[in-house]
Image 1 (spheres, chains in turn purple, brown, orange, blue):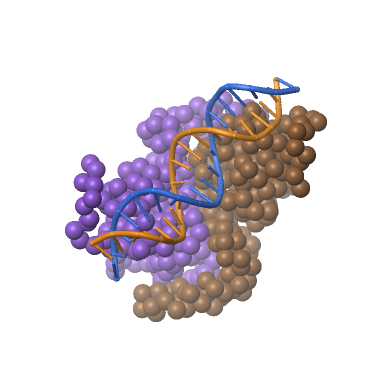
Image 2 (cartoon, protein in one colour):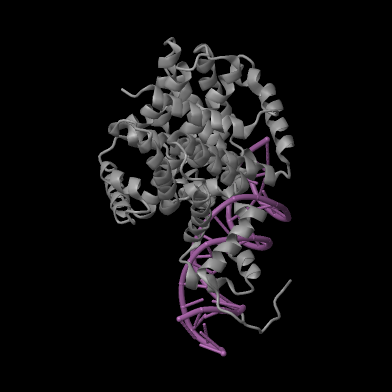
Length: 223
Length: 223
DNA sequence: ACCTGAACACCGTTCAAGT
DNA sequence: ACCTGAACACCGTTCAAGT
């Protein structure tokens, strides 16, 4: 697993290679697993070499996000009516977040402007096609984007927590649910009442329900 | 600015003191500014002392979030109709996020269950009062929460970016807008068209528009 | 019971030296 | 032009020694 000492890489590194290796590492080991040490090892090079191609860790993380976001957005089936497009766009993004929970952290860690612009553009086009009044195009798009980002953030937090404590998804949800059930019933009436539904609920369905809520708000207010 | 060497604190530390000092530090210097070195200095103690009262940094950050979240939730004026309650609740949370942008990071950095439960409970009670069908209570509450969390996340990212590059809010927005204008018009049609609205837009109004979108979706679908 | 502060492990980044 | 890997600065956490 260790490169022979004294050898050099036969081919030269590329930005693309580095980003791919970073993604593989992030998927395996989470955001905490992305270190220059580990990355250099998986690329069979020295840590310093990476800096020749990518300025710093923030740029690396953003590039990893952008790689996945741009590919995912291309794979959304086109030529649907705008409302259906928005739904399948949203689901594609959900599945992306679910498969790569670190994207939530990546999008919020500073300079992730490109991946954000891609998502906002994809959403905004469809919102605009939906025929919402011009004055509302931005706030509607922004609402959809914030909602998706929030779901991504929760997913990232859950994944990180589960990884740190070596929990699988259902154990994690059960833990949260029983923690909620133990809260003061007076101060946490709602959370306590809802706790039992938590382990059984379908994240993806809930996510889509939220999208539909926003969409129906959009189309119900054409004035 | 340095404590006299050889002296001990006259009073003993408390968890409350530590959390307050942490919040002050976070407000001044952002999430990157919260280090045990800086915190110990501001408390006139050694770095190790903090560990007697708080297990680790994650717990510290969560405690800081929870302190602010719980106080803010108490200050929402009660006894309004549920829809108005939800609006003022949301605005209170927005103002909280705006005043303490690091809360966005805090809520997503793992074990922030208590502050999350508080927010979800406060939202859920009102959603339930709104009379939405039982089967939708959770997804509606969850949608509102995710939306708010997404806005918080964006706020945190923007604040961090602005701080790192020493930008004020309007310079930051102008930079983003002109970066968006420079993008390929074919691939980023929407983002480019909307770019000019960005510097002038009102975050708070946009936020509330998003809340209203969700709420109107909620009340428009009573079946 | 609570604090001190040096020591440790770890990590991002730099850079002189190599090819 | 591109890579190497040791060195540096910084940071969270621990812990033996203090009071």
